[in-house]
Length: 291
Image 1 (cartoon, rainbow, N blue to C red):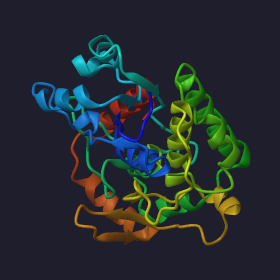
Image 2 (cartoon, helix red, strand yellow; image 1 turned 30 degrees about the vertical axis):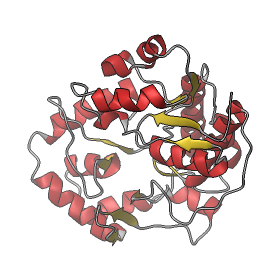
Image 3 (cartoon, one colour; image 1 turned 30 degrees about the horizontal axis):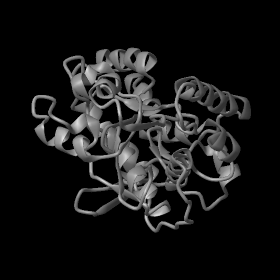
């Protein structure tokens, strides 16, 4: 029974906190209980987590596998069979950025790039081929063909459709309908507010709540922003952001032009040992898990 004191938490990755905020703003009858991002939880210290889950009425969640032990969704459903559950996808979309990825280390962790964990593999490949800054910038400025871009987008949408097929809330159609009219992602796993608000609205509909229109000022997951492929500038307009932006934990914004970004990234690669092997490993992991 939903009332004005119905409480919920959202379990998932970095997308979970903004979505929980939007759910409460859209439908204030639902009271948000803070829950840490799943990848930040110490699985050996779950007392505080159980305290949160004991008291909430609704668990809104992304697919959480049994690799998270007792916090896997199947385990939680066994532990809390009487709670209401609503599932939504982990939103990964590389249609705008098919060349972005993490440079993972086999022993764990990643090689940090200029903008956090993200690397433009076109820059990395060109560096491994012995190309310099001027040649690399020319590669970044070259337009992909319309067919290549549309194939990237369609393939990414299809992967998302498959991932969300059995979930309560789906996002594929919203992205498909708006992919060329607005920039929906800052990087492949950081959706815009528009995407997350849509997810929140669909969650509220699933719960039978009332919808209130909301506006937002700042992009919740806009701390790292890469420019889209040059071809997509024709869709988004000439004023589309072309810089590389990182907002630090102290809210200092670092904005780099293309030359600065490439120069700083090459400095990192020159100091990174075993780069070719790391890149091969990163490509294998990307093929396996998608990023």
